Image 1 (tube, rainbow, N blue to C red):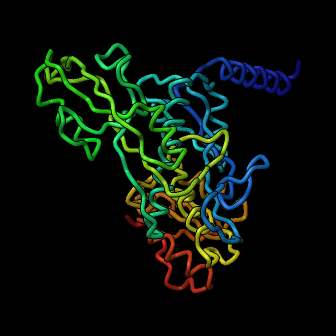
Image 2 (image 1 turned 45 degrees about the vertical axis):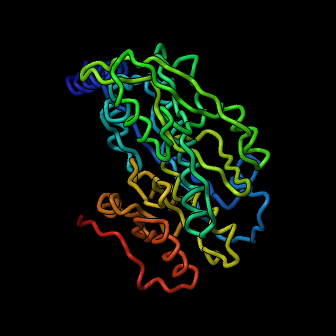
Length: 363
């Protein structure tokens, strides 16, 4: 066999062996890539994303697209070849697996956490939108979760409305912990509640619950500091003056909050908020309308531009990262609150974009 042929054959065999090895060598990395975008003013799977009943709504145009990121699952083991390909692919990012799934989080745990965050983001989006429009919203303190094998298990339930602890009125979630920790472990703590079923029935009927119940729980002892605990996490729930349903399947996490809120504002406002323009964006939102940062910002800007967006509403804390690699033709608009976002949309709708607060690569 000629030397040149033998060398080429040997090189080919070595390369083939390396490729085979790469397929079987597992690496502790995960991949992020641009996910689909959905217009909050439009439909998803044949149903409106935002459905408002009991209040006059107005026609909308253009787009207010929420954006997503695809990630490999918590239980998926990436091989070396996939990792190298991901590093070389322009629209993908390969990151340490621990960054996406800390402390060995499983697919099931991640899915549950994302679902809870998505549900909370919808609630906050509704509250922030109505507050922006000056529409009153009634808040109440509820039992958000009950810890398994805790003193409250079987006595308190998720969704119970907490009216008082030891007779002291409760007006904010943090009040519950403050009142419980006044006790010592082993002491009784009296909760005045509206059971979840009664509260839900009253809310559906548009009335106040008929009565309350008293539940006594023996306080347990927290590990570490030894303070009194009952094993619940308190949260906030709201009663709205009309129905706002948000329907979007196969999406989790809190990052669509801003775009949901803006979609609600647009539908409840006579003026067309977008002026027919294609706007996308991202960001968490709290009840007060403050916009928070999210992960995977560059994946979201890529996905938005591919979908046709010309403007991207960007949380202020994500601006530097997003501006370091902006897709051609996409303008990054810096927002810190829902009010910032609505003011910028008014400028975009009128074509008055010279004064838009744009993101800079410098923090």
